[in-house]
Length: 498
Image 1 (tube, rainbow, N blue to C red):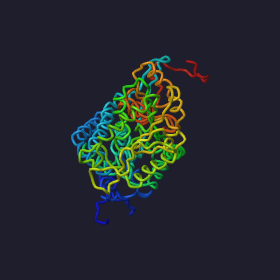
Image 2 (image 1 turned 90 degrees about the vertical axis):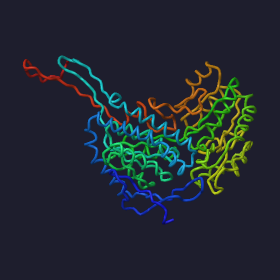
Image 3 (image 1 turned 135 degrees about the vertical axis):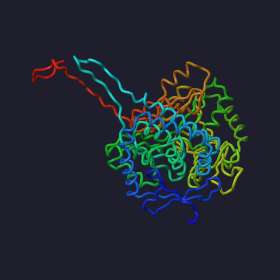
Image 4 (image 1 turned 60 degrees about the horizontal axis):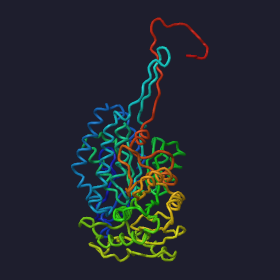
């Protein structure tokens, strides 16, 4: 163990060890072995990184937009050219198959490209002669040091949702990635330095709750961006807001797919498999519940089961369809829901335990799992399982399905599969969810729209990237201006009337 590589922090444009000697293991999920260790920052280490970002802020804020955009463009070109190298890191530490890793990076690249338009996106407004000789205009300015806390399931894409927009707007960043797969963040920061980013503008600090709490309370941190489970998202939001910070806090999900009787079941089955089992179900936008309006359930289940038989589960470097889960603890927790489903009366259509894999038998494997006739009172239905588990709930009508979705505590993503345009239009209007797909199973918006859910899937009102991201990482200042000409004069102590 002591001979394994240790992942350091990245502070002030270089690797940094800090003062803490605590570490955590980083596994290769496909082999079940510890591949590296990662440093876990102390409060002092985190505060030191914030101080570096604070010191770097004035010069970065005051750099011309033209120069900042040149650096952003260089970063975009380098990331696009070397995305294959980053995909290998994601596969090695997260376990997702290489094609999925590349897809994650490309979606992150979209946000980098969106941030290239920051000079236009951050323009203010101007009103001339609102009163005689008086003009009013608004400008958008950066915040200062911002903190980002990103999850294990998208170690490249979620940081890329945030720091390109934050940096392009003139802020400096302290990024605290998941300690389960930390290397991608260092790689991105090093690449940005190569692109010309000044030291201290993007810093990466690894750690656990101690580092997170230090980031939430540090008075020099102006804003916090987070993606993770609902209980932690609530904690992040409440703690950071209590300490006077802006907060983007995206929580968990239980995403439903409503299937109407007129749906194309071939397309629907493809979508259900892709959205339910891609990335081993470790997606906040994964479809985990199919709400089947009878009489389609039996036929749809048969088509899903047929497709699952053709999937290969195994090492992500071997061209498989689905990789392992992130850790043994998480795999065991997800697998435990199979026993819960059985005890609660569900039919186990496909049991993913003991799946034949193309890979090391010690990897953290669980194959695609399918339940039918799931009770809405069961933990299988209520919990965010975050694994390759797909549940079928049968309903008698569109209205019953809609009511079921709207009763959920979550409101992240949903989808409807139908060939009825009127039903789809009604659904998009009536469903209480932040992101809706119509015959699209994972409706993650493109970079120039914003990502975020409703209810317990989002705390506060600040969504990620797109226009919401620009607004979050900048603040408006209104200026009322009058330039006096030589003829002006006189004193009037009354309240201004014009």
